Image (cartoon, rainbow, N blue to C red; front, side, top):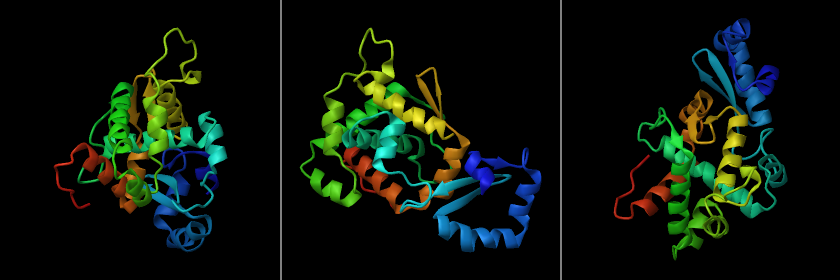
Length: 233
């Protein structure tokens, strides 16, 4: 527990004895399942000789208050926070919109591509007459982020610090920075995003089993392809 709280991953190369105990000692695994996981509302993700921690969707030691997330992202309002959250959802949909749910459906994503996806989704969702029903069903604020995003330029010229400017690119980079800080993605030259193995494992072994992600994916799919029938997941 201590090592996983200090590092994104615990692996055999650096913690051989610890990994062996967690993998092969039934008492250790039972302790995790019966005491630590329900007490702290976390899950232990096993990927071969690597272990990760994942937080619960309902709370637990990894949950954040809105104020904490605003500080981490460098934004001022909840509307900005909801926009950053929508960017994350769109990024997940872009990388993991596959039927098998085993790994990413693409190797990388350009920041400009992600911006186009967010714009398309928010234009269609924000103008939908069913937006209020969608917000109730998915528990996602859609109108606020749509209004904020669509009123912004993609990028402002002659700006030294892009992340401090008031533009779409700034919100994209600040959101990706936070994901990178947690070892979930890599951002190359503020241009290209790569999913990290930690994100792949969390999606494959934990979040992909949650109806929450499937609801969001289905919402985005149906709005982009209104004539297609929804697929069961």
